[in-house]
Length: 182
Length: 304
Image 1 (cartoon, rainbow over the protein chains, first blue to last red):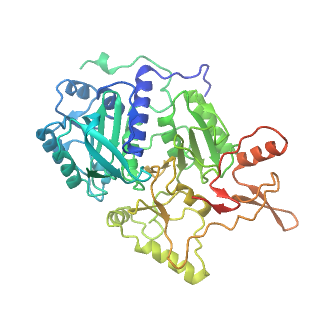
Image 2: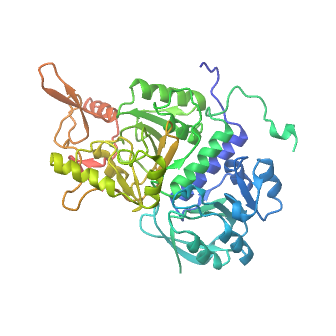
Image 3: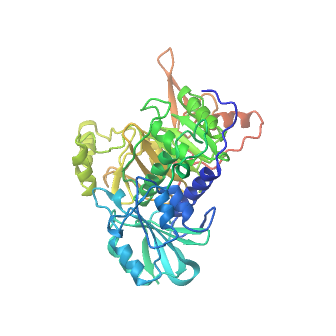
């Protein structure tokens, strides 16, 4: 193979690569705030979701974009990716219905992306893989029922992996993280 | 939806060789692999211009991560200049424009066959290990479905039995490479055929490790600060290779993992397995500036 020019990524590839890098480090180091290339959930969906995925969203603006990426729009029970608002108990109810995989197939646990505000509100103490000792975060704009719902679904290695975004910042909370509500 | 919205402008090939849907699938699986450390995640393992079994699993992970500012090091049994390593590194550069490097300190992504570099990896570095056989249970359970059930049940008794039988038959654990290790207290993984010497480097490390088997179509990960405990009996502690006192015949460095080079008279000399560490040591001895990073082993002893 001979190439005459150094390959250059297009805008979509650059965006998807940077978005995934943020998600990867966010999940590898739970509690750290990682920078996304652009605010909103569109770029995250673009980097992860395609025609092989079944997605759930309660955001009417995001639904057509997910459909355009090829994902089937389904109810929470069947979704492997969910872009939901967890500010209200209704969102937490959807969250609680998402698949958590099984001990045989932990990879079937869903990935959830939700909007939050960092730096104010509920204090959480995190321990687990990716955290040297403990980490503390404060998040707001999340219904307090989420943490109990998450604990009920995350029976390791089963579980749901959660990304919280605040503008163009993301925090990852994989199922392996134990969350203590302070 | 129309055909126009689904079509992208023509390009000779995708950036980073893999097409966008292959990368998305790998990204999804890499995230799941991080979320469940040490658990093998199935993936499609696309065709790459290299035969299965020559590092295609590691290659696909690296290709997904690559961007123009990446600095990529590829090693094969510790050496940067072996044919396989040099070819993979050249390919990675050609399809992504990423910079090639031999220096562990300089690299952002290190793709490796069967070694972890001797210099400590940092928070921002990613180690991609090529894996020939990702299933630690295969020697004791050839049936994949049964092995999956055993992982689900954390049923690892037969692995302990293998170690016990080795001790009974030979007086010591004979498992040299690919030493089964418990990750995050839950899943036993094979750390790929790295020597026993390298397994402690994965425990509570600062860097992120991906392990990917292209032929077997499975990948798994060890995130930073994750427990990786080699299976060992409490009264027969885990032992690394007895290389702490060996001296490299070319660089004069002592206390690292060595390759044994047989000589014609029947004796043997030793050479640093991490070849670029040896090169840097020789350069330093010749008065050049060749910074050597902190190493996991000091004076032949592992330092956590």
